[in-house]
Image (tube, rainbow, N blue to C red; front, side, top):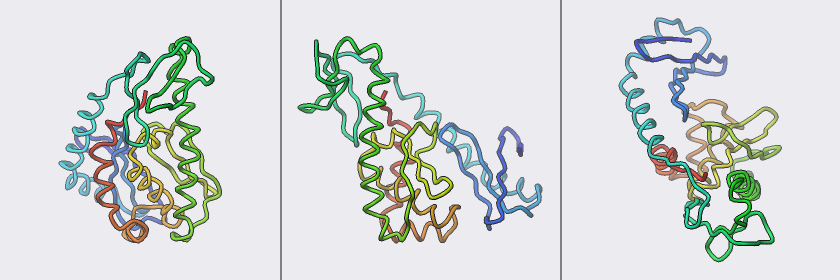
Length: 229
């Protein structure tokens, strides 16, 4: 742990890292990545140079987080799916706990109290299919071979590249517009070849997605306001 003024950083050292990097997790946790041999004094100096950027990122995330209301499972409530908003219609009876029909989410009234559980399950099922198709579409071009694609709650992370070539994605990725969700996929697939955000890593992302910077900017600016439940 490194403390500089009122900022607390988790320090992550890696033999494969060549440069210092600060990241702000979606929950506001600060991470300072560094090579093993960099002394604490240099880490502190780096943080001091970057502290205004860190404060701006924390302020923006705090503001966006406060704007997200809790969803209620009542008639007319809106829920996102691939960037579009669909209203909920509660019905007396249905052949499914939740389905998307006629431009609306349809759910039996009797299940409304457990609405979040059913909606998250529906999102996970759709996300698995959509994300696997997206990974397959980019795999050959990026020259990678993921071993599996898994969807789960990743807290404040959109995705993660795990051991053994497994790609993990937050189920909320399916709430994003398709072109942004695709960026999340490419971002994680590039980590199969480059574990850290080095210049070479970003070159790989750019080769696969020339307009990645525009998509990355949208996700940073609007991603925290995306909420499905």
